[in-house]
Length: 156
Image (cartoon, rainbow, N blue to C red; front, side, top):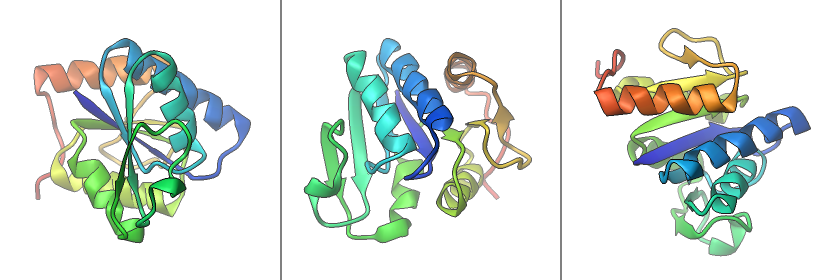
C-alpha cells in the first residue's frame, strides 16, 4: 500500500509532531510513504516511517535529488515544481493531509477529483475530507477505507 502524506514545507512543532506520528503509524503497517520530499510535514512524516523500518519516497519538485530531506530513501526528481502534486496524489492509494496551505489544497483537490480517499488533521475544511483528531485515528480510518474499497468522492 502507498500512502500519501501532504502538508506544508514549513510548519509549527505541533503539526510536525502529528506528521511524525502519522509516519510511524504508516511504517508500523508496512506501507510505503509517498510525499513531496521536502521539509515540514513531509520531513517529519518521512522520519517517522523510516524509524519504523518503512520506506519514504519523495516526489521532488526539482531536478536535484540533493533537495530531498535526509529521510527520503527514494527520491524521484521531476523538475515540475508544484505540478508534481499530481504525481504525489496519483501514486497514492489514499492520502492524509496535515495542516498545509495552497499546495496542500491543490493536492486535496486532485485527490477528490481522482476519487482517492483523504483523511485530514488540522487541515482545510472541505466536503470529502474525512476528519481525524489523531495520527493513529487518521491512519486506521484510511487503511480501513482502502481495504474495503469504500471510496465515496471524486471522479467527476
